[in-house]
Image (cartoon, rainbow, N blue to C red; front, side, top):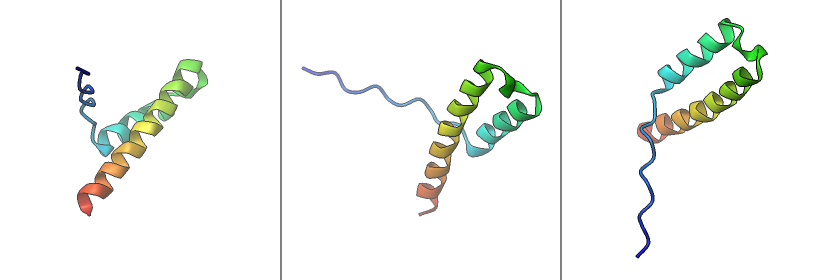
Length: 58
C-alpha cells in the first residue's frame, strides 16, 4: 500500500519572511553565492506566504 505524502512543513508568516529578507539585504549577504541562493529560497517562501494570506482573506 502506498504511503501518504508527508505533511508540508509549517509555513512561516509573511512578516517573518519579510524580516529575514530585509536582514539579508541590509547585511550585504547577497554578495556570496549562499546569500543569493538563500534570497531565492526566501522569495519562494514569501510568494507562498502571500498566496496563503490571500486565501485566508477570501
